[in-house]
Length: 99
Length: 137
Image (cartoon, rainbow over all chains, first blue to last red; front, side, top):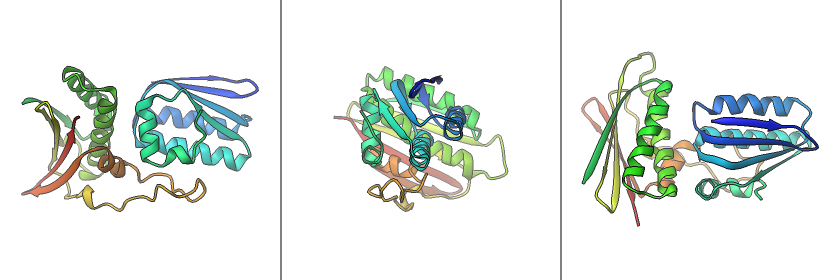
């Protein structure tokens, strides 16, 4: 999996490839950086994210909870159909902001 | 009936091999992206649980994954010789809770059950056998 971060008025984190139990470790580091650092508005771009397992879902929830506590926002965009299905099944589609 | 098997050891580093195996098998069987995603997720969750909990202090232990497809139903049988564990009886998370109330975690087994048509567990002697069935429409 590739993770790219672009800072600006809002921080865009783009995920590419598979977010599984192993690759989640790298994403977790980015999440901690974002939560401990300045970003108040994060956009998670999932255009090239092809797979997510529960390890990835756990991190999305951690990030959403953390941003809310910080008074910031998190938006998910360009999420693929197969992954949206998982977000619906787990009830995540009603607690995350998905565009 | 087409069948394929993979034999891995109880190490998280073997996960890419497992995902690659499912990817190739579902591609060969010309299954949709959505089915591919669902099977991968269910198998990863089941196998990661085995890797993390079935053999607490032992390494180099076996996990077998057998996949078979008859054009209508895909069957994945996951076997190990670790501690007896029946994931089918695990407590389900409440997916209707608000962001604040929602605990982080506990979704792996839930996803397996939701994404598969049928999930069954048997202890055969000293072996755990988890069978995942997905009806393909």
